[in-house]
Amino acid sequence: MPKNFKEELLFTAVMAGLMVLVMAGYNIALADGFSHHFIREVLTGYPLALMVAAICDLGIIGPTVKSIFFKFILNDYMKKKQIRIALTISCMMVVGMVTLMSLFGMIVTQNFGGNFFLTYLHTWIFNVFMALPLQLIVVGPIARAILGAVQKRTAPATENLEPESVED
Figure 1 (tube, one colour):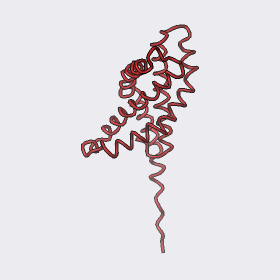
Figure 2: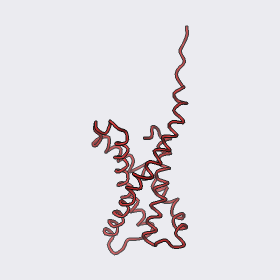
Figure 3: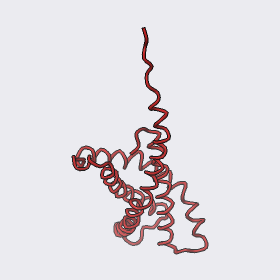
Figure 4: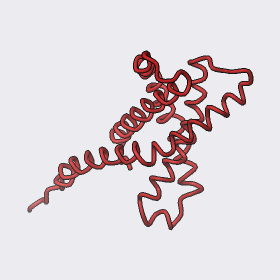
């Protein structure tokens, strides 16, 4: 888990960067198949989608999920192992992010279908089925490993900063 804002930015960059890239490819493949324009379409939409995802993650979903989790869900059983907390928050984040990013994708592509609600529901369900395992099995472990490596690398530097004793 990130311990400060700098680590939160790194974690979000890795997490959102990988999730947006894969989910953009997934949604484009679902909509258009694997045409010769596939990579170009993914890379063209990637910067805007990444920016929106980062804003949603850091400004809306992340704070909301953490507030709900730490006020209503966290219990003594979860506190025994950090991974339980991380996985629960990850699942909640996926649901929140899919909820907003599915709407974003529909707006950007102007894919409203005949019935907006049914099109959104279809998009949301397909995205949850892809995003949840992607997050739990692939992207989450990668992001936690990178964050852990950074935390280990910076930990010795901060641990050695002990206050000097004052001699009389």
